[in-house]
Amino acid sequence: MSSNNTEQNTNVSDIVLYLKCPRKVYYTKRSHKTRSNDDVSYVEHLLFKEFGLKYPQLLEHFSSKADDTKGKMQSIFDETCAELSIIYASELESVSGLTISEAIGNVNACLEDVAFNITEMLTDAHNMPLLKALCGMQVEPVLYGHKMKVSGIPAGVVELEGSPSPVIIKTGKCPEYGIWADDRLHLAAFSMLVQEVHNKPNDGGIVIYSRSGCIRPAKIRANDRRQVLGVCSNIKKIKDGFLPERKQIPLCGDCEFLESCDVKSSLVSKFF
Image (cartoon, rainbow, N blue to C red):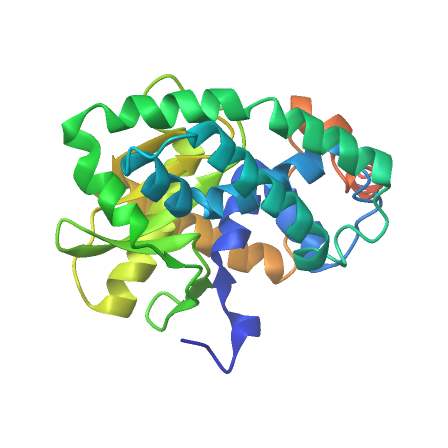
């Protein structure tokens, strides 16, 4: 579904950005980006995202008990690498071949862990409904909620326990148990959106941690939905011109908006 007035709506990607840093929403809206994408970690992120979208293929092959699962995984990853520059032509336009090669090598080194963790999941019969649902995943449907005025594209939607449920892909480190708090709110936003679009109650979803091959189902609570609505309200204020306070966090040094953020902070400090 699509909206004719998307400028007034919040995208789930805005929510993810806000959870990283509220100021990123402000600067993204105003195109203050000052750094290029020629960064190994950025290319790794794209590779893990695309590889995560191919998990249904991996699960089908692994669950069939076919031989040469390691070879199949390598084949799917090689396919992902070949498609990357086509899918992300503009994003990778200024990225050097050396950066891309280094990223491919780093991701390739993770494949053994991915294979191990997927195989481990398949040995537990309790995981079968979850894995079967993922094999039938509808990939990247466009969703728009008229009541919430929120739109977004999850990695997928699956039929889980009789209800349409969202799937998101995370390319970072996987927690030892469950899912990260920010990932829970990301999933909650899509859960609310899927519930409105399909007009069916939904209280959960799935997070694929594609770097490690871990697949985690999660329940969504009332407090998660409440927090999402609060974040949406704050995002609207930021898009209307409110500049949030700067929060110094470890990731600030690598932020593409660092230069603009430093200047704004200096200007504001002159009045105090």
